[in-house]
Image 1 (cartoon, rainbow, N blue to C red):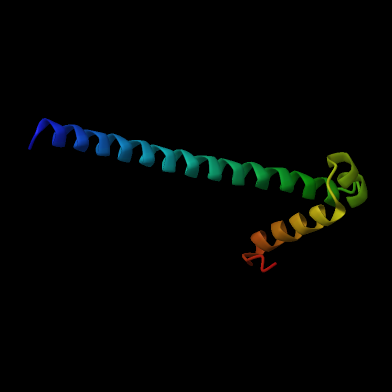
Image 2 (image 1 turned 180 degrees about the horizontal axis):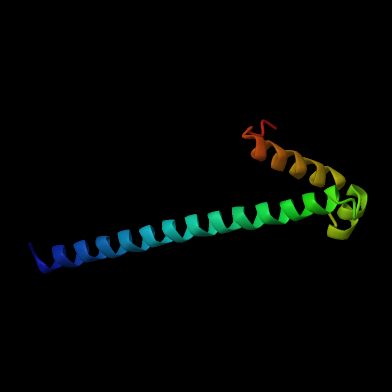
Length: 87
């Protein structure tokens, strides 16, 4: 093997290492985002269930549409019952 071959192999290995690290980072970000979103929508669900605010008030407070609130409450309910959202 020549020095050029060794250098090319080191570069490929370094590139592979970077790509693997990026995949690991991206997966951790995806998981953390999913957990944060779940916690957020569970809080919205709690507020609605305690009737502290109604859906319109929640939507106005968060500057979301009522449809967004409804869809996410349905998705949360479906995830709790093990159903997949088919929308």
